[in-house]
Image (cartoon, rainbow, N blue to C red):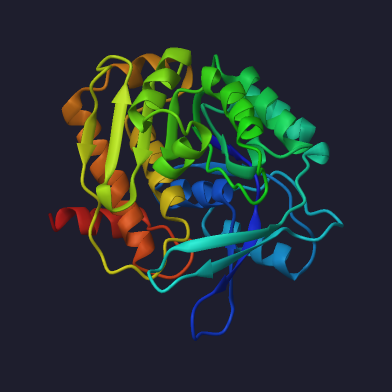
Length: 313
């Protein structure tokens, strides 16, 4: 079982010359949906209200087969407005309420029973919920595959030193990290993305994957350091980039779960992945992200959709 912990929200998408559109979103929730659509059991622990937006989130999770061990509360559901430029790139404005006070029992259960735990984004950096997220990661680190995507949001956490401190509280307990080049250069402006990936391996991570937009993906694990591998981006006509990184993250996790890389042995197995195996993993993940950006909103592919595209070569 994969447990995903973090924010759920509604993306209100503002595209040029088009009416506003609302889609369920939030980076961690997108990952839970993505992994479930790729054929693995996933549950989501976050918060959302009983309002119309919260009902949209619950329906989206259930339609994608994600288990929801927590209940809605009386607060309003968080909202992110995604302003889409002419290129398809998204810039975000947030109205966020992030707390896990009512989910402590579910978090404790997850640390005992989940073979994989994913955290990241706003949920792992914004208080009061972030402390609960970090503690859960620490508690689960010895028995589960831990994955992390910092997915930094400077409009919410504008102080890069504060964001860096939160990231560095998670990294030592993490097996798999996925980050964008923008994340890493904002957190560590005075060093290259390769240097940061190497530093995070030295802090305890087993595999670091860095997305670089049109430049493709770079990855390095602890056995091949200081060198790494690169593959090009999957080429498609872009509708928008909402959820692209989350879809890639979900596919990375699903690829590992397909190969029983989870539980207490995950770190060792990740560190031992060969160059060829890493390239296969990255191809799988970038293809999933490519399918997602080819359509509106955070709408990751099913296993059948992904395998069909992969079979076409």
